[in-house]
Length: 278
Image (cartoon, rainbow, N blue to C red; front, side, top):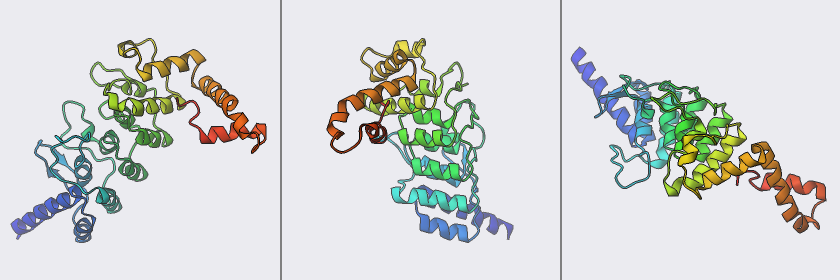
């Protein structure tokens, strides 16, 4: 009888992971209602034992490329619903993969893996369920990965939940701050997103890494380099933001003069324009 129960448990675990990986919320709920453990682990092809929450997140490639070899063709609409169902059933938002990898791995930690992929809704669900935004089990924080790939919304979310920005990474010889991670990836398509990330980190109090090898390595004309130099020359982000606002007011005030009192123009511009973020 015990063998039958063990086989059934293994079968249900596989079904739960499959439903999670495919974003099949209805099937997942049926299995959870039957009492299948939301933290049950399944060994993957890489030799690690993952929870169903890991399976949901791992079903999404790190970047949107044709060569992403995903085991589960996860349904976009169902992924957040699956995460919510698992968390409501008692899945741990801070679960790590087993066994612990020798080399640091963002996929090992749920929030890190979600933020690295730019999964905003899933990141929010994990945080609301108690995921530690400043956890650094391998010396790297979730916000570091989000900054590296230019996931602006995830960076903003983590900052709003108390993520620290000036701690240095402890991975091998790397000692980057979060802003330093936003200077590492040089793919041209990501530069506009990384620029927006850098602006938000500066607003949150990030230190400007001017006298570093990272800055020296940036090519002339790199918008991140130019922006950081402008902010530094202004005396820091608060001063740069003030100068930027003044320029916008001087440029746009004549257009609003027939609509608003002069003293309200600055207020409107502050809410309407991304002051300091360019």
